[in-house]
Image (tube, rainbow, N blue to C red; front, side):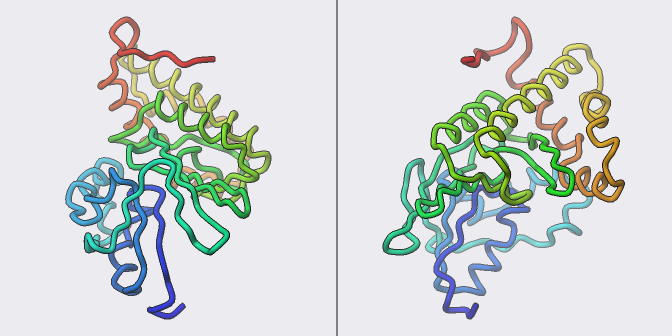
Length: 257
């Protein structure tokens, strides 16, 4: 692909493992538009707060993992809201689906031609080598209610296939989306119980769910823990619980069944 050939780059959300290189890509491909959620656009122009938030997840590893984030010129951005059609050919569009929960600046993209729904991190992380699906609940934006609402929006679209950023197409898309909601609820129940009892949330999650990996190749287990360890998920649950409260002190926290 030559520098004049790329027409556009669409990011599902602005977390560094998805959009950290956008500034560099925009410089390398001067004709490419950058499509981004309306709540994430300003952080690509000025990534200061984005880097600060990433520090909550990666700590001292941040610099070695991602290096310096280059800002993106504002005029290169095409800001997206829910339900917009991004035309990629005369007969093919990507329809945006606002999907907060993992992050407030998260959107999915539904391909009109293939029926594939590109869901970013909203459904979770799945290593094809293991078949295990785990939620992705990082700070600072994780919100259980919004995450479940987003999963149900995906079901309502009846996608032909679902594509996870981590990693690839999943079998039985509707079943997988419903499975993702059930798994997310299980993790939330364990996290909330630990939080209310003053126990360490990460430890509680590890005890509850590490057994899923007991028969897994150690290399695959290490890879999954690196990509989606319990500590990042625990930090997201903790922040959500501190904001929302628990039990009688919780804000309106009801889900239709």
